[in-house]
Image (tube, rainbow, N blue to C red):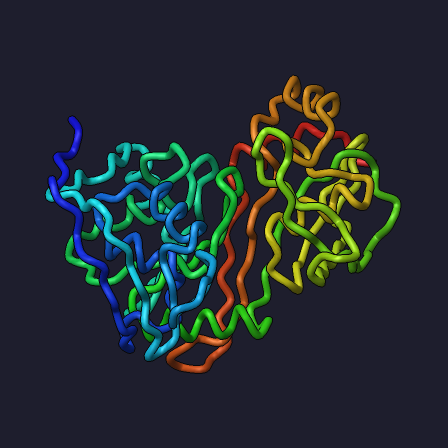
Length: 319
């Protein structure tokens, strides 16, 4: 059923950012403020410069600061925005995959196949599912993101102050992230630090791509070989920076793309692995280590590898 819209446009809004919205991404702020407006429309008005911060243009990734003044243009707002549909199997997966939780945040072992949030043709994701499971929660926001088909540790803040602190830790590289990945081919090295700058690009079909480029942003990933198989290598990947698709692009840069990576991998290789049961990208956010924002103590959270991937590895021939 379609949501009925107001027949008149709202006036221009000028919103001064208070502490509650400090350090929030502009897109998330607008999505919350303009309930019922499609995300694609929100992204478009920002891209066209209709949304201004302190009278200047910004992109959707801009983080709001205390005292910023945001101009929101006239836009139709839904009178009764329909709640996003969240499938029951996602709700069930969320219920049984909480690795850690306290008053300030929780860490999920994100299941593969689910986006972290709705948008771009996706009705709902992890965050919408959590909000429906916990309607009493006043605040639930993603601290960082994982690709749709990547599983593993995902941080969700339950307080604005905690979100700000965790964002600081990520920005200052004080969060140690460790991933497990299965690379195509037999990687001869035991350990390697990849320093290859990355630049966002757009493919002909409109698909977002990231490429290695001298004009890109600095990116560093440490790869450590864990086990060598015939035709594949299990590695531990530790990104020291947080660029989009960083591990995936750096793995391909090594000449050993991640098994099942349809964007940066090789189709013939992926086809061969699919025939052996690999239905998704073999990338798993295994561990997070950081200073607890409230206690200051070191916190280590580990997400076990999904059974489906564990079972596939058991059938690989070790070298």
